[in-house]
Image (cartoon, rainbow, N blue to C red):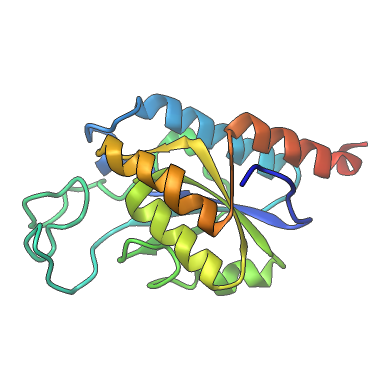
Length: 200
């Protein structure tokens, strides 16, 4: 589904752009993803729209076939304690006092946090999602947002995954069932048009 509109109170959710993941071998240059997420954040803040910055510090407790317990967290493939600073949000996101900041311990940002209630308190009815990993934290957050009744938009050039095929599958087959997709610039243009009266 092509990008069509943004609700009057739309929030940006940035997933897992934190120090511990910046060295991971992503399919796309992480610097480009970071720059686009930062540009989205600046545009949302400029118009007084909520920005939610999410980091991850743990993993779901269930057993999996592909990784040991506590080791199925991207960036920590062998398990064990996380190094100091691993969860720090990267400075490029320009965290502001008005930002919503939550720490998740599941793939999706809603299941283990109070993100939904925080967004509802701001009157949010739509979310734009960016970050990493496309088929992990981003997709899980998009599914949870959709199921919670939010309109969902995905900034497809402001996300990446360590697995190119998983990134492509999410964008081509999953996201169109959860909401609308668009480029960072298209979303920023829509934010500007939707909220132009506020800067007049």
